[in-house]
Amino acid sequence: MSVIGSLIFCLDCGDLLDNPSSVQGSDIECQQCQARYPKSKFSNLKVVTSTPDDAFPSSLKMKQSVVKTSIGRDDLDEGATIKEKCPKCGHDEMHYHTLQLRSADEGATVFYTCTNCGYKYRSNN
Image (cartoon, rainbow, N blue to C red; front, side, top):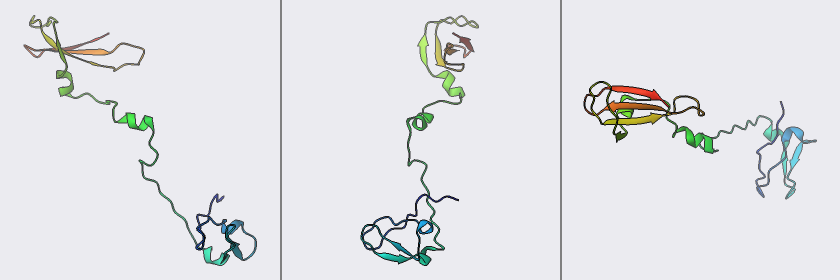
């Protein structure tokens, strides 16, 4: 096992002390103020660190909450109203809503809902 840092600080000046396992002799000496500590004092020391999930934010993680991963029924009913003839009742007004369901280099899928009879259909652009 390789230990990179000791995370042991000098009580006199606060400087970071060398790792006890890499120090020759029976004492650890502070490189800043020359205070000495018995190496045996740190023999059973275990350093555990933890980091909260939001400690290292990234632009990619922040975009996760923006990306829509599922479609609800209400999502299909929302949208703009356009002049489009309903194939079922012939009414000339429908709501439409678009979603990118296929790969980015293909067109979006358009969902239509008739404002008169509620008939729903979709088309791939």
